[in-house]
Image 1 (cartoon, rainbow, N blue to C red):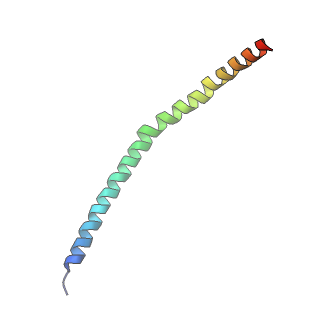
Image 2 (cartoon, rainbow, N blue to C red; image 1 turned 120 degrees about the vertical axis):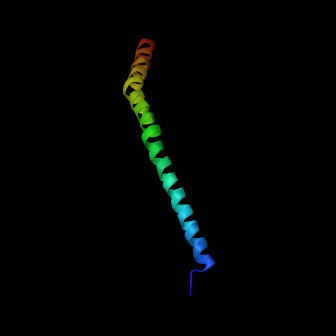
Image 3 (cartoon, rainbow, N blue to C red; image 1 turned 180 degrees about the vertical axis):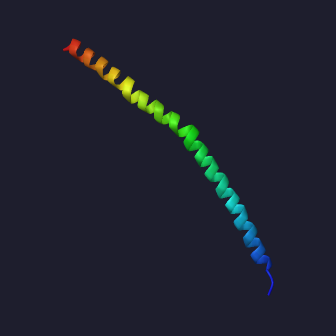
Length: 66
């Protein structure tokens, strides 16, 4: 009644998947901390600064034309 080869194979697979999942989590955390926040900051800056200027230019052009 010892450990069968299937049990060893399953344990190795589980260890392998655990390592893969751990690596994937590290990549995810790295992406969210390094890649996500600069995008958020750029989008916020665009919304805060560029869109009001864009709309004011459109309003000036439409007022002058009318």
